Image (cartoon, rainbow, N blue to C red; front, side, top):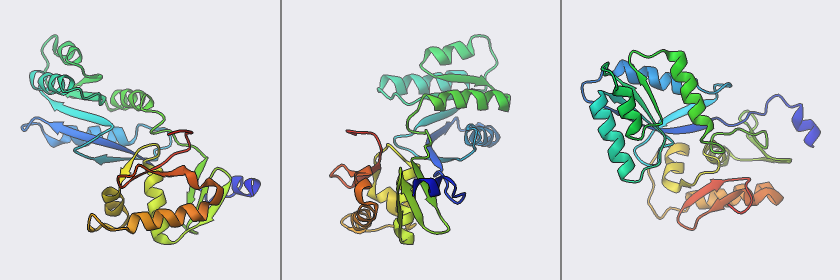
Length: 232
């Protein structure tokens, strides 16, 4: 079966998702953040990357504003113990502005107007440091046309809802995803906190995967993870 899978052009590696928190000083023109989002989404070689803006547990924080304001935001974040990588788009032109922002704890800082290629390169370097979260691997693949999934050499065919749920977990591979986020992604609706929808579908996916069923794990608090790392 493995040989057949290697030559099946329908198999695709799921799109990875970068969860980004975007913060801007209230007077900042939206064009800077639009450019930043575009650069972030283009910062991988294959381009198979989606940026989801979130308020909690982001992978990257994008900040745009004046040097003093940005440095203060970064400093507050670091004092609070937030380790999230920070990229600052600095709108101040005075000498020493970039140094102040970096000294406050930012990982990257570019002056506006910035060169899109430079921003893309810096973001790409930053994203590499997020591995293995954003690493793609042929160990996990999907075929949307036939609703097939593959984990290493184990192949299974799922229902549409099961397939979409698996794709959601694959996009967030090696990260816990709460049932509420899964439901919002897969169904686009809100369900009762006591719903067993995700648990039932995960059970069906595990059963379909057979010997590879342990790749989907539950933390006991309604969060799930797709992982191929032993002992996670």
